[in-house]
Image 1 (spheres, rainbow, N blue to C red):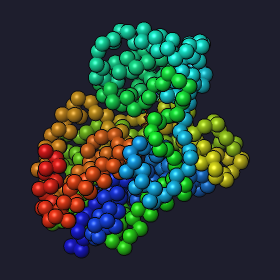
Image 2 (image 1 turned 120 degrees about the horizontal axis):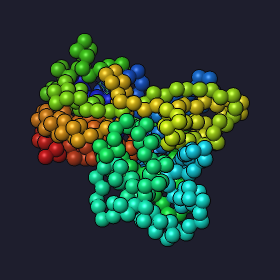
Image 3 (image 1 turned 45 degrees about the horizontal axis):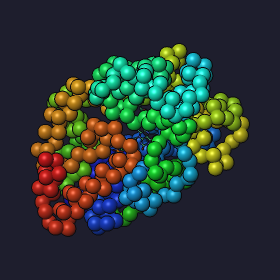
Length: 397
Ligand code: FAD
Ligand code: UDP
């Protein structure tokens, strides 16, 4: 074995581990990925018809308040000043998202001040006063009251998750801020922007090291290729960022995921919808939103007579589909605990990233979590000679 560590999966989690191990710790790193490109779901490519950069696995907006992550990512790319805004079309009218004073006043045809709007929403959320909502339905109503919840959240969530909002964790909706000002920035974070030369250029810079080898189209579970699970586990430290249930052959049952089908269209106009993301919360359309990627880079010289749009249709992932969003029903959470137990006993393997931990992780969170694994597991092993397994176990327990 010519490698000091093997990283399974070249998403942001895996690439951060690989980059730090090679450039900071001087290790020889092998990264394998079953796809034919690096970058996991953050990968982007140039649309062949329009020349517009498209995010192959769904729109990816970078944002963070983590100083360390922001400094780290700026080593590999600069960022444009793009600030994300989302609009939503309900009952034929366009409103700003996330819900803010503009949405509230437009919806109620009113001119409430922030205090008046707060009082109104508190009254409309009164049915749940004093409770600590644990599911998406109750959390949504307690945040914005029933009328706004039913207009903008209930059916959108139904289309997105096809799961009773009472069975979804409250954390899904907590990602969306609610503001009593006219600020309709989608994210609250200190730093935000898009990589100036695109995601793929950023990702390629991260692996641009003589100490990192990348093997694409290589599945960790394919025993016909040399770097598979049975050949590696116990012989070399492994950072595994694929699905945790797949690693254990689904022995505790399959964890549920949502996937997205994207349909691509080429309207003959230089601007289809005037903004990057338009949500459709009503049931008259099957898709949840339309992305028009040209708006992510207004600074670029894109064609004036054509554009590209993607409609997103969400459904349960079946075998062979890309797992996108962990569903996280109570049954999933029970299964996850069983897998965590197995992972704690799997010698020489760290499980990380959104698939390896069955968690929705934004890019900055995946990168931040990988930097912690380097600090807490890999550095003590490499610099202080602590056996990989001992540090790994103390991290899990
Ligand atoms: P991934 O990017 O999923 O990488 C895992 C890699 O492991 C993949 O390349 C996969 O091919 C590989 N792999 C899996 N199994 C195997 C195997 N058996 N053998 C070899 N390789 C394997 N984050 C944001 O910050 N902003 C956003 O706007 C945003 N939008 C998103 C939109 C969508 C639709 C989705 C799904 C996610 C979005 N994210 C966003 C989250 C972002 O994609 C994740 O933070 C990021 O993907 C996490 O990186 P990761 O390395 O953990 O996982
Ligand atoms: N959501 C909604 N209406 C919207 C936007 C979001 O109901 O117009 C809910 C939905 O349940 C979604 C969650 O809020 O899953 C988080 O939204 P976000 O935009 O973060 O979803 P993502 O971009 O990850 O798909």
